[in-house]
Length: 80
Image (tube, rainbow, N blue to C red; front, side):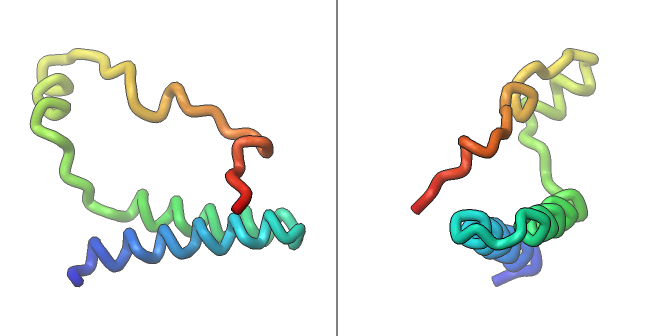
């Protein structure tokens, strides 16, 4: 496994643990801290953009998809 795959695996484990803590009513801040750690890992990764997105950005097009339509609420947490 290369470094990037290892980092993504860490992100998945952190997210799963945060979800478990939340579901089992541990302090909310504990789950939030783990999710912030996962976000920090994601932001530190050198992610290769798809070629179509790089082309659109180079041409000055505004990309209106992606995360802009995602909303997060307490009720959105999937409980297993």
